[in-house]
Length: 415
Image 1 (cartoon, rainbow, N blue to C red):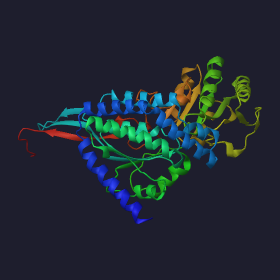
Image 2: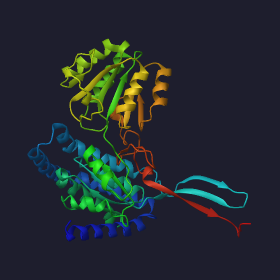
Image 3: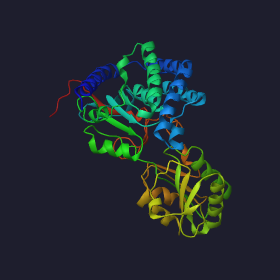
Image 4: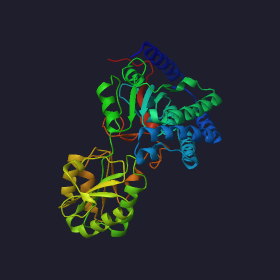
């Protein structure tokens, strides 16, 4: 690693730490004003954002990105509007900082409160999707954290303009511009350096494919909120409603194939084989390649490599199982603990599915594409945490806080 990169990252970290000290007690109305102003700036500069994105799209085409990855990278006016809507939604949410989560009195005379407090400095490393720049910046700021953003090389130009809009918002609200910083280089050495900056960064959030997350988990000396790949299953039970199931599965696979909530594997109860085959036929007619297991007719035959696979493309695996326990056994073996769903009208079967699986998100009779912080009412998300420590599932502003105890006495002493 060059000394220039190391020095640059040290300076970014020092500035972020200093900014975090001010953000920890920043007024709620200042944070709200910053995010609303950032949303206005993004919309006013939308043509600039889209022009920058076209440079990134050209870079992606030259790099040979898949259609699904190109879809993740692309910004048009509707997507910029969605990004602005997300900023505004986070802006008007209740400020989590300072919230009292519990309080109690002790026989000793002490009164104890547990209150939410910022984590400090968060490093976010992400691929392809430039809108993560706005989502991560907004959520970290709302929770009183400084953030260091490192977008993927393919979204370099888009993230640059979006970051500039976020800084417009910080200036408008009189908050430190160092609260939201962006690593201004494609050099991967900067990522390696950030992963070891234990004096300056409190937690790393990787948002991307298995390769990125694996790299971060191997090399990080800073704590990590893991966002693993979305190996998402839908189990079609024998008591599934045919019309609901057809609608949900089609949406879960085809609405956007390149997001982590897209369905990647269908598990079909032997008693629902006819319905399952019809849905497979519908998927094939919609342009989806179905890799079918024994007893099902798909585009091609499935192999062992198709179980536990995140395609992020117009591809899905399909398999017959004996019953809900067979589905649970398959999911326990191959799931990434992200999102798994059941289609059934049987309450007992749904309860068994929910109880015996431990994915971060479990759904019934709903598209897995709802596995998204905005759809959970969080305004946006910084990722879907698949681990079990601190944060799990969609990570919104509240999940980007820790807590501290405030203890009050009245000259109280311990015997």
